[in-house]
Amino acid sequence: MKFDFSDVFRPKFFGLFRKGGYDSRTFTSDLIAGIIVGIIALPLAIAFGIASGVTPQQGLITAIVAGFIISFFGGSHFLIGGPTGAFIVIVAGIVAQYGMQGLIIATIMAGVFLVIMGVCRMGAIFKFIPYPIVVGFTSGIAVTIFSTQMKDFFGFTMDVPSGFIPQWICYFQNIADISIAETLMSVGCLAVIILWGKVTHKIPGSLIALVVGTVASLLLSRFAGIELATIGSKFPELAGGLPMPKPVAPHFDYDTVKGLVSPAFTIAILCAIESLLAAMVADGVTGKRHNSNTELIGQGIANIVTPLFGGIPATGAIARTMASINNGGKTPVTGIIHAVVLLLIYLFLMPYAVYIPLSCLAAILVMVAYNMSEWRTFKYLLKGDRSDVAVLLLTFFLTVIVDLTVAIEVGVVLAVVLFVRRVMETSSISVLENDHIAATENDEKASLEDTEFLDIPSGVEVYEINGPFFFGLASKFEEFESRRPAGTKVRIIRMRKVPFIDSTGIKNLRNLCSRTEKRGIRVILSGVTPQVQATLHKFGVDKEIGLEYIYPHIIPALAKANEIVSEN
Image (cartoon, rainbow, N blue to C red):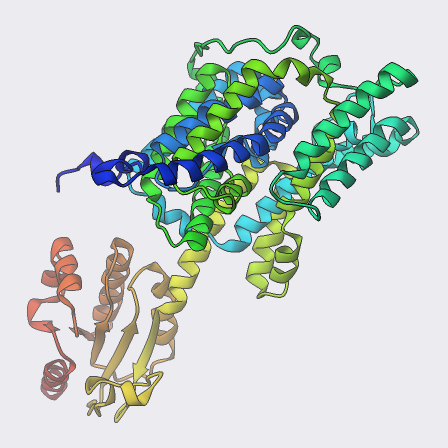
């Protein structure tokens, strides 16, 4: 089959202007929504940048560059991209261990992984990741963000170690050093964010808190002599304003790339999950449909290009996407305008960013962590079956106590294991007795073959497989074999409900035939579908069993079995 790149890469923006599909009325809606979303993204970009262990301008650069590229090359009509809280933990860890060069390399590698995922049409796979895993590490990230913000929220001045448990040990050991002024500022800004939501949702409470907190910090400094920690005090090099971003040339070497494979894979998986989840939420609200493979490629391009300007990992953001929809955004133009708005703010207003208090940003991130926590969903999932609860708690505690990278890797493995387990549960083996009527869920809908009486001769066993024939059935065959009485001459394996058989299933079938024939029992296959027949032929199993012992229906198979028994 010839590969056509256009099948997996069809950006929504590219199709807007075909046949006059975009008019001035739509542009007006996109313009208004883009301006509002740009204002909403401003405090979040600054806060995410600082919390990730980089500078505020790097957070803004990410929102500008990645926000533009994700909307320009993405596969969703509505997705707004930029830095998100989900990346704070992993980015801070990479910066602490490998520095900015390591983060740039890891982000570019993650972008390459995302492009490969999109080209390989893996977009649909992420829909199969179990919900408890997504909630587990999302809630875990929220708790981790909350923990990291306690230093600035309460005005601690000591160095805080990494790791959830060491952080809280450090906080309690230094509880006497809490700054009353910083704490009051944090609590006040948090109150503004919460209460402003009762006034209006058009202007975000985080922006109001940012303005109020900055003004209050300046007034306290000038008239009361109370100096609060600000962006300027943490990054004194920004006193002259934010510098223009310069292209960065990463230095790749084998050892660094090898060490960053795991973190880069984590970034890619996290980006894919969060962006496609946001796109699905937007589709559910608007009735549109996104192209998941195109979205992965667009996200990949954004994460390859953004770090070259000093940015950090980016993905689609649910909150900003919903803000765009709620304010009338209709196309990817909204995301492009939001990036332009942030660029204008960066160029003309950001010299005032040095006066923003860190305690105000901590309050904003505490609210972000609360919204991310999904505690109501977490509580609801605890009522589920034991396996889902175990997966939820394992993913959550691995994220909080161990590491997000480990949690993502274990989560992906768990997703595969759970998927295989559920497929195994759909596959079953039954032994049909004489005059057996095959059970159905609804007798009124049963087919003629499902309700037929089978005259099974003495000395003949009929095993019926229901579902895919793969490795999960091996132990079930052995269990049935151990309970069967002596005197069996023929074993019919009925495969009418087997949609496919994989290579492991082929191996198990060969082993079954080998064990059975050593006992002097002849194996006959019945109800073999054309697809299964083709697989048997490919591996040469049909010749090993004998073409004369493979039948499309149970009736001639039983006739052959009766003939064999009579001869013996």
